[in-house]
Image (cartoon, rainbow, N blue to C red; front, side):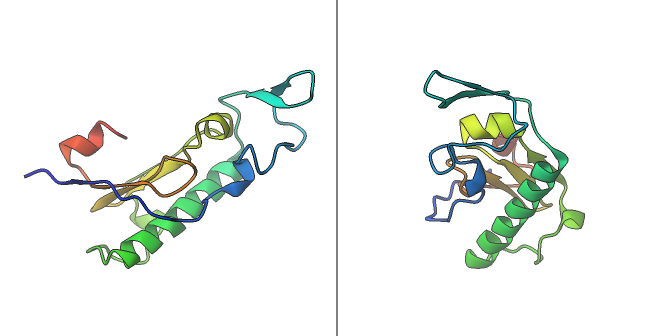
Length: 134
């Protein structure tokens, strides 16, 4: 039997600093295109920094711990970098446009922050259905 779970929560925004509406002015150094009014209309999709990647991973691990605890999942806690089997944090430019931060996988579950910068998806690790979404 294959089990796939999608969980919708009222979680807080995981990475508010990349939210376009809340922070319309991006810091200097980010490759952007603006319109004649100065509004950001394009962020280079592959632009990112090591600091952004590390902070994104920290935030997703923090959220995965909260989800595993709240749902009482059979998951060794706390989840740390050392017990991840996979992690993906998107590039800043892609995330800014798509509002999808990334995901982490333990030996038991796949945790995704892939909609509106919030925890949105949970799947059993190594299930055939999960592989099509990662």
